[in-house]
Amino acid sequence: MGVLGVRDLPEPGDPVFVGPDGMIDADLLDFVRSKELRNLEPESKRNYATDIRLLLEFLSPRGVPPGAR
Image: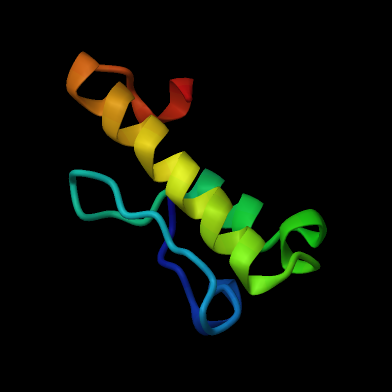
């Protein structure tokens, strides 16, 4: 994966998912920047982010690689 630029960033206040290796998860960044998520209310975005974080925290210690999610 290449270096992310300013145009790749989500809107202010949108979630960004950082993996255990400290790298931004590009697939989830694409989801955050998608039309479907962009049009949601801030509270809905927070709810999605919380649920996704819980799922990732469950999968990570079980050795599920980021691309398999």
